[in-house]
Image (cartoon, rainbow, N blue to C red; front, side, top):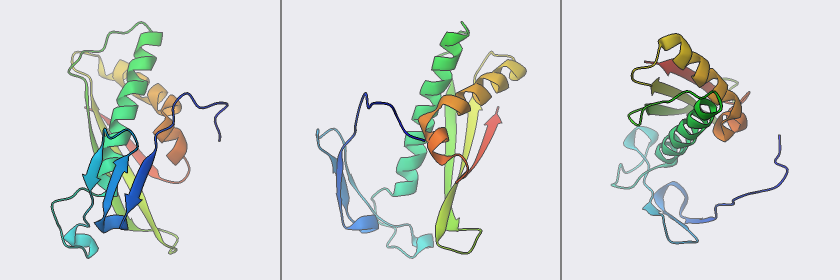
Length: 143
């Protein structure tokens, strides 16, 4: 799947891999990277790619959820939230590594069936969902 034309492109520069640094060209984000001890790392104070992916996916998915709700003229409260989990491990086919994602969506005050419908529709338009579809197991749960 590709895009017709880019409306925005993010640029980042990374050195050192999982124990390095990353920063965006506009200076808005600069992070130190460290590998968790469970992955053989030093468990230093820096973040890691899985945490960054969890933040990016949940923020993007919430944006897609709001877009779907607007299109259906449904008001979702400001307190709507997503708890995301990104797990790293050996690929099930035995070659390399992969991630799995769980998104727990809470839309206070909305009927659960309607919330589930909005979440499924958001999953169809979210860029992260589209990028991972068929490659990454994504579990969606509505609280």
